[in-house]
Length: 288
Image 1: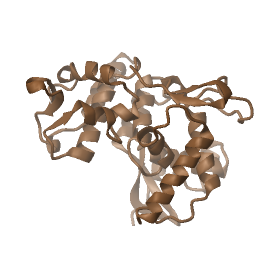
Image 2: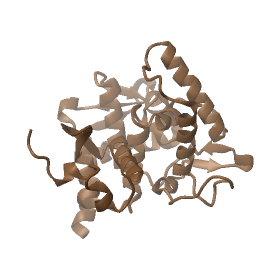
Image 3: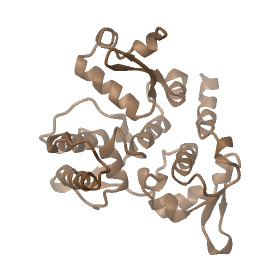
Image 4: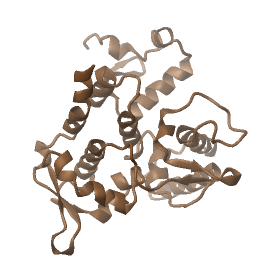
C-alpha cells in the first residue's frame, strides 16, 4: 500500500484534532458531512479502521480555489443538492425533500413519518440496518430544522449553535406554534447553471436511457431538481425555456405536439455536468 498524502490523513485521529482545533466528535461530524455533500470520497485504502479520503472533483472546484469559505449562494445550493438528491448518508434530507408531503408539519411529525417509512423499508428487505433508533431519527429531524431555519426564527427550547449557511436558501419557513413549512416557488439565488448541473445529474442517474424528460418528471419525481430545490412548475418552466443557452446546447426545450419536455442532444458519456459549474466559477477566478 502506498503511503497516503497529507490530505488523505486529514481526518485521522492522530492529526485531525490538532489540525482543526476541534474535538473528536466534531472531527467525525466534519468527515460525515463532507462525504454526504460529495466533496470528499474514499480512496480505497485504510488507516486502521478509518477509510482514507481525497477531494472529489466537485470538492476541488469549490474549496480548492473558487469559494473555500462558502460565500457564494451557488456553492450552498450545490451542497444542498448533493445532500438531498440521493438516499444515502443523509437519509432524512432525502426523505424530507423527496418523499415527505405534509404541507405544514413539526420536526416531531417529520421524525414520526420517517420512522414509519424506515419500518416499511425493513419489511420489504430494502433496509437491513436494524440498529437505527427512534432517538436517532428524532435528532436527525431536529438537525435538519437547524440547518435551514435561522436561530432567530427557531422557537425557544432548541439549543443555539453556529448559523448554518443553508439558512440563506430560504427553503424552510417557521410558522406559529412551532410548525414549519417548505417554501415552494421561484428561487432567485439559484443559478441557472447550478440548476442545469442538477438536472443533468438527475437525468443521468435515473433516466439515462431516455432522450427526453417531461416537465412533470423534472418537477415532481423523487430526486428531481423540482423536488430538491422546491421549485413550483411555473418557475421551473421559465428556466427550461432558456435551458439551451445556459447548457451550451446540451439540452433544449421542446413544446411541439402539445408536449412540454426537455431533450438532450448528446449521449451521457459525452456530457460532463461539472462543466457547467466550471463555467460558473471561471469568471470569479479570473476576477480574483
